Image (cartoon, rainbow, N blue to C red; front, side, top):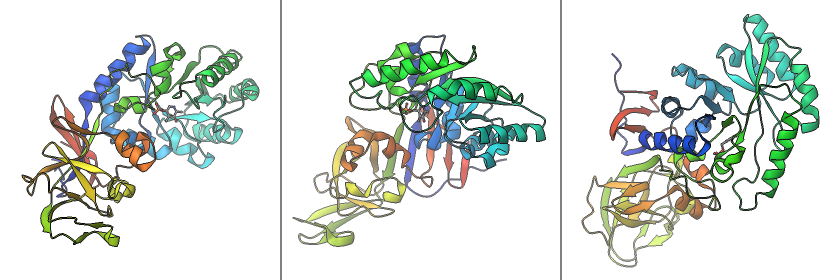
Length: 390
Ligand SMILES: *Cc1c(COP(=O)(O)O)cnc(C)c1O
């Protein structure tokens, strides 16, 4: 029997798989029943924990999964996920054999990768599904539109490679002005029209799903929307997304400072009065940006307690002088809701001068994940038990 490993650390990410399911249904409703969903679960499912999120996404109707690199795909296979897994990033030739053995679906943009996949397939007496990516204006990864037809023809000379899909990625779909996105889309459609028929065409990220559903084509590729967040402040808010991740902790110490005493490295905060300080065992190595020092807040007893002093690697301190009931063991919400109060990933991102994506992805591997389904805890994963027990 498998023993559940629980870390003693009073810090965890709560991952609401019901919210994830709700978000996927919202997306499916937006695009209609005939289009497929590739759930983007790269970067440990944007910090949420890829194996559990991938399983729940497939159960909710996603037909494909998307990861950035081979290791992420292998992790999902090790967790027993059987759905097609598209490698959205560059595949170096030396990783081709691992991709083939684990039945991953690479994106192919160079002859080197194509030949390496072909060689691996011959060795293992198998074939591999591949997608072709076109760079229509992101200026990042893909083949140039004018080279795509010849490249697709070359791919068809390698009988072990099954070209299944063609796609592109938008640079500014999350901005108000959709002119450039429409230009990218037109270039994609024109290029795809010069490729073999029957390919799965997919272009829409979360922003395009929200604002440009007419670009749904055969499949869409939501990432941030799966996790209940909007890609930017400029994207329509009518998808009714529910945030999936909360980051929670406990008050690990309450102590009293006299006026004039200081908190944390650098002594950047001095108590202006007799103060009660609560210790929260969550630091920048857990994902709380250090730049929230003396600026951020956590929720305790439904109220905001300001971060005082510098955020340390593994812990930080908050001022609870104005919440006198605070006691050892109280829940502290770093991201999420407590009563009517809420701290969003967007709020932390704004303090840190970044985007919600980066805040979510930063939730560290050492933070245990607790998965909720049907309103109750169904599984957890941790550094010691990455694939999770019951
Ligand atoms: C990350 C990624 C996505 C998802 O983008 P969101 O903005 O999170 O929806 C889609 N497609 C590709 C190719 C990606 O790399």
